[in-house]
Image (cartoon, rainbow, N blue to C red; front, side, top):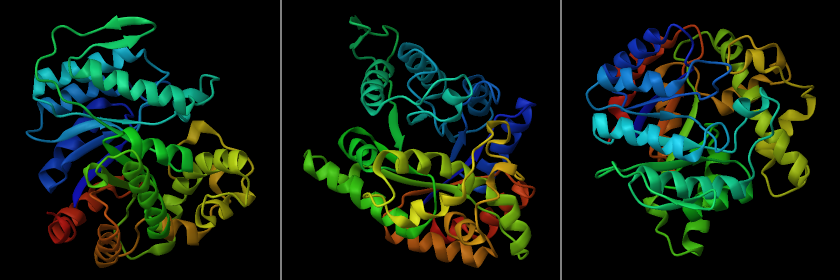
Length: 332
């Protein structure tokens, strides 16, 4: 299993660079960030510094979206970084949540997302693609490579992952949800003649190593609220008795709304509806041995990477604990 770290690009940017440099030293191979340019600083500027100050770390957004930037801009950003640092980026992408909603826009449709993944990959790898009705190619790309990993929860989105994406990002560490989503992706891949084993499966969730479970839960409760935004969309689309597992949908019944000013932050006041049970299921808490046990279960389900959201008050201690007590027991 590979390991990644997920950060928000809060100022100062140098702190993000420092933490990801430390993460690589601790054994993490991927450095991910949020991509919501109103709420945080522009990640692609920061990636250049991260790549310059690390030796092999792969960086990318978790996740970008098809609508914040023109697809030619997104492709050129990745292609430029890859040209400078040797194909060390990955494009995590989804329909868009905070980046779109904070500017008064709705997430993109799956049709737009599908088209964007194709065009961004083609352009970033130096091939011609149709963009706005015009054939476009970035002429300076040489030997470019860009994998597209798509974030998804619902049946139609999971189908698109299996049909088109190079990787799948699941933002919850619940094994029951992981089993259903991974099987859905694999089934969709087989249906179109793709090798499901060629799709990288990435689980992303907060992890906090320690013994004070009450404190850990309070620090990580925000994650249930963040996931709840996507779940609310699914319930609106499919209904409470639709095809989405109840393990994912039941807990949002007490949800009253959401304030993006506190998005992804410990102490988010919009997440009081999230019970301890959901924190324990969706996140990794407790001593290092408990983390190893959960990760071994996820690995058995086919998870290739675990990416840690480090939005809590012990991020460096958790990175150190993973480096000392977890990564070595699960690394390939």
